[in-house]
Image 1 (tube, rainbow, N blue to C red):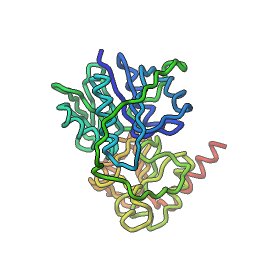
Image 2 (cartoon, rainbow, N blue to C red):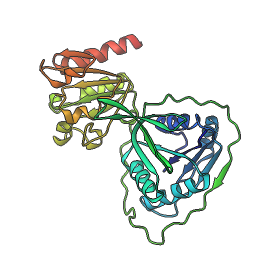
Image 3 (tube, rainbow, N blue to C red):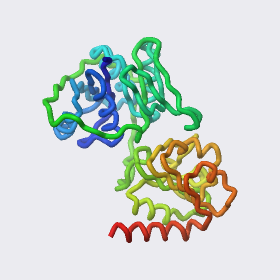
Amino acid sequence: MPSALVFFNELSDVPSKAQRELLTLASRFDQSTLAVASEVSQDAQNILANYGLSKLLVAPSQGDVFVDHALSVLEAAVKQSATEVVLVANDNFNREVAARLAVRLDGAVVTDAIDVATDLVVTKDELAGSYSAQAQSTGGTLFVSVKPNSIEDDPQSSGQQLEVQTLEIQSPTTAQVRVVATEAKAVSDRPKLTEARVVVAGGRGVNGDFGPVEDLADALAGAVGASRAATDAGWITHDAQIGQTGVTVSPQLFISAGISGAIQQKAGMQTSKCIVAINKDVDAPVFEIADFGIVGDLSKVLPQAAEEIRRRQA
């Protein structure tokens, strides 16, 4: 059976939901190794030990570099572990790292995957989730970016000893890109948009007021998303944008409020397990892909839904 390598650019004391899903997927294989391009705390190591990892390779960065360090770490980890498949997150940063390494090492890359079998057959979404396709590499190391909410987090072992090694890397003498400034984002209790099991998204129909959208999301312990029309209007930050030019989400429940459902927006949420659409326009395209549709004023529907949910939770 092939071996698997999981790559994280950074790791907090508690691995994120998407990271734990990747570790669960890697545990299917004969051996699984984790490479991290940053420090790994003892608390994090204690959690990682529950996923049957054969080895943890750590290579903290020595400076404020952008992608060069991640490339060096992953390349060294692939060569040391002689792995057949590399699993990474399905975000822009990790897709770029995977693609560049696949070219450098004469491998293959598959993005937007929802499953990887032990025979290295990759299942993925195509055409904004309209089709499911299977792909298999014809040679070289296979790099796969896996969509969040595709694998159920399921630690198997109970705190076995984790072998930790410092990974020796050859860093470039001159970084091509260097971080010159950072700005901390506002802390939120809501889950990360791309990893949330529930997403409530608002569009042009909210008319500048995301209060009802946020209130329903909080009642469901979900994340808040938006259409491009809402972010372009300045009603919410652009990191909440879902769609062809934003992020792609695949939650268990997606609630669309005041969004028409143009093809660009569908591309970012069409693979959601259950879609509930709320719109005053009975002919809105979003109703074509919705599992449940409500023709009504979102400013009235959303508060009623949030109130009923809290009543049942009490």
